[in-house]
Amino acid sequence: MKTTLLCVSLVALGVACQRVDRTPPASDTPATADTTVTPAPVAAPTPPTPPPAATKVAVVEGFLTPESVLHDPAQDIYFVSNINGSPTAKDNNGFISRVRPDGAVENLKFIEGGHGGVTLNAPKGLAIRGDTLWVADIDVVRAFDAKTGAARDTVSLASLGAIFLNDIAIAQTGALYITDTGIRFDDVGNVLHPGPDRIFRVGSDRQVTVAVRGDTLGRPNGITLDSVGKRFIVVQFGGRSVLAWKPGDKAPSVIAKGPGGFDGVEIAGSRMLVSSWSDSTVSSYETGQEVKVITGVPSPADIGYDGKRKRVLIPVFSGNRVEIWQLP
Image (tube, rainbow, N blue to C red):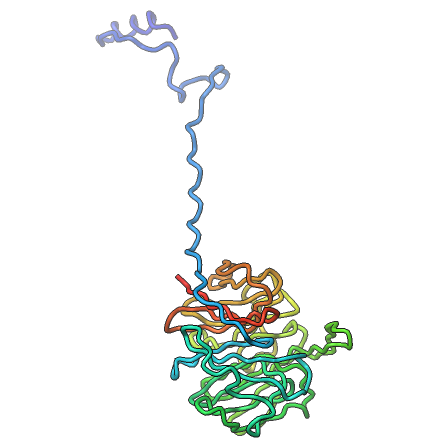
């Protein structure tokens, strides 16, 4: 429609004539019109802000195959288990160290196999209840006085065929739950997996039972109590899953996936922290998605958590050191 014809029509209706553009609005444009509309630029989505990085605050040297670190909040001290040799050798040369939060080694061999009536072969996972320190040691769990180091108790799981007791978590009832990774080493150091994969329970009466078993455990390594979720969190060394399990359940459920080669697991506030040998990291899984918190730490074993200072305590298994990292 041209401007002159439109003006004639409007005058006939008593409407003043105004200039009209030759091109009608887009909504009135016939479908066959040859028009080109330039779309408005779309702003690129703002990438999510990465979480603040953790900071390494101390490196403590001088350990011998450190496997686990545990913060005892009552004494405000760190315990470090030292295998000191093969993880399956019953050589009675393992020991537990006491380290202050400033990184000073208070007593390298606070508890030492072969001394003071102590038997300690290849100590791995640690757990504490009251003033009793529990230690996983190949096919037994041992109890010590957390203040003096004196031996208190030994519970053997050998009669149930325990192979490679790894980590310990203590239920609110006081019962112990211990993972058995089910692995052995041959004469040249190859890792064998005769299995089975299990979690044992030791009751307050020292009665030992198999709480759960099966391939779904995936060579279970770290275990911790999630008191808020009223469940245990278990991580697979032989798989890629982070598992949740409640006593009475026949099998665990998968709650997250990651790189695998998992070792330690800790509940740190709302975070679920897991160490991985596969990519030398400690990652958080509180939303079910992996968020790398610490990177570049080879062979990170059974991590600990200092809730008083919000620190991650990492035993570097093959590096004979413990790294202390500050969370933001």
